[in-house]
Length: 352
DNA sequence: AATTCGGGGAC
DNA sequence: GTCCCAGAATT
Image (cartoon, rainbow, N blue to C red; front, top):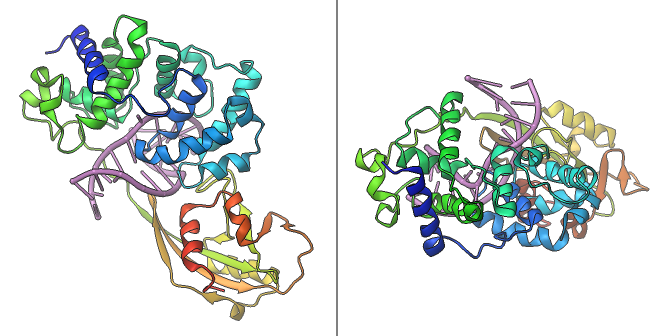
């Protein structure tokens, strides 16, 4: 059994020798730490590496982000998923400017008042940017703790979650200055050694005291979550072109799938779509059905049937109610859902 | 306690 | 195909 002191000492030494040291967000600046932590929620490092530099280039500091239109923020987030993160990020930037005078607070509790910042994210910011003695508990950490200390519980159980938090707290190193290396070490160990499948126990600094390894339960811990039921959701996309060749897009409601992004008019029933088309002077026989596509989310299987049509009505303005007529050259300026990006790219012209 | 949020990496 | 990823907010 590894003692708390032993655990933190081994982890810090291992991180300095074998951990990751060149990720672009490994800096002291709270803004960059915060941005990376939000982007990395439920998202792997390899994916974030594509988005983080563009975001920093466009919004170099929290004031620039707070002053930007939401559409610009969502445009840079498009494709990364979980768009409430981007909407909350924008809100939180305004909170930092207006509630904290433009500077991130160092206390975990104060950080947790920011939209989209929960306990673990707040702790990570406090540890990396301010050397605060706060414990994180993300997917990597849970896996490491469940194995090293043979924690066997239902991941959906509140009490078990609480026990893991208490364990994480008990393992913190005594010195504030070691908090970045310790916190990074937990993440690095989980991501590169104590992996979900085929962990590299031979390279693990905890191997000789790992209870799961001693009990031959590495493959069984942590316990798996029950897979959520995936419901199929039929959707109908209306790809409407005007005489100038512009495509009609709508900003989606803030709540729900792809909230705040721009999408072609999207309906859950065919009759709703035909009613909408009729308002644009298009009869049912004026629409051409395209082959359906599927798009899988964690808890939904979207079954999307696109319909294409043209309107001859003169649109005096680019704006039309909730809609926006955009030429192909302008699409890149708006955040579109990934499946729509893919569809428009593949369709290239032969659709119309 | 259960559900709602995306998209992709690794296998 | 499966499982899960530097989770948080809502119901």
